[in-house]
Image (cartoon, rainbow, N blue to C red):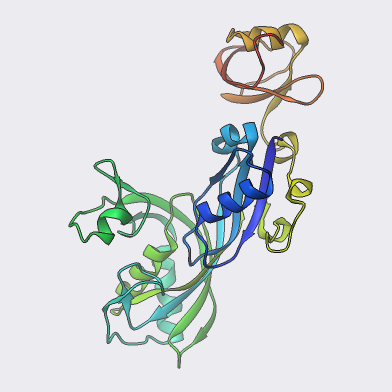
Length: 291
């Protein structure tokens, strides 16, 4: 079975816990995921099944949309409620102050990822080093925040609820830290829910709890990748692709750098990379040599 499963992950399990659950539900099928969610975070997690794991990097991945909570007054080592408080006693800003600060966090930003993250430092995961209390620094990364809005604010609790649309690579926890710092206080994420990845939304995702027929919810490759440029290839072209040879796409008017090729039966044939006008080279092949 090849395809994608769009999961509505609950808060608590890791992304890999979800992968294990899906793998077990599909009788040991090959399963991978795109866009890791922290254990605290809930919402949309995309899993690839079978050969579709090789297509995860080609899924439309932007923009990402989140709803999240920012609790003022304390910063934790993980920048969320799962961590230990490392800075406390911070003040709680007013609604007006929070709203006034948000425009500073839209557009292109240079963001320092959380130390408890999957970023690699000298070949090791940052969270592994952080857990062992190894000192290290993470470089800043360029990210884009397309929109950031305050949806509600409980000043008594010092907790704001916000809606975010951003690029891949944006850390919501780091945004919480930075907004609080700009307001002269401390803060951490009280909840994070991913609402969408590109065209895929949490409303169309499944909760795994109680599902014993996961395979019925697996979305075919051609449906999940329908927004990507594609081309139908003939039997002769399939034979060439299976052998790693270039093919011509005359008459298709394709100009895209990367194209998904499907057989005449709508089965995935390959991911093609443009070399020259109408000449494409197979990057990833899904056909046997004896096609």
